[in-house]
Length: 137
Image (cartoon, rainbow, N blue to C red; front, side):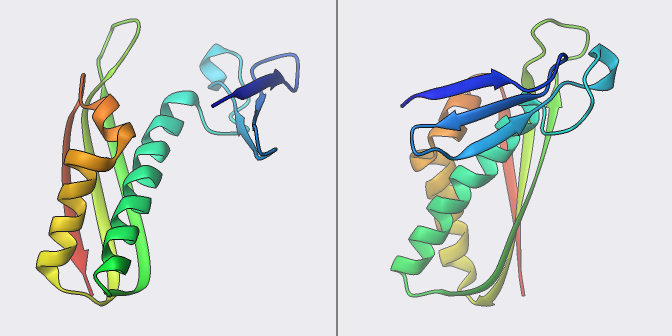
């Protein structure tokens, strides 16, 4: 796996490109001279957790022939105060699903993702306590 990051402006606006040519952007906060033009790297970690677990959950539920009509995830993280580096200590991820779904199958899919399959969760759990909740409609 290879990612190339290049600077776009004279501050902190960055472009990352993967081996397939897909791009994403990062920037720093205004407090350090950035322009808030894109995600900050630590925000990207939370997005990566939501994305990684979402791929797992959707994949597991599809295999169980569960019909997902709408799917959203909200993830919130708390970081260490007054420390450098400031690592995540607590992360909560909430899954909101709509469709013809069995509650027990959804819970099991989320648990399997966060406890077994999601590489991002397994990486973050070394410093952060990860909790989850979900709602079904």
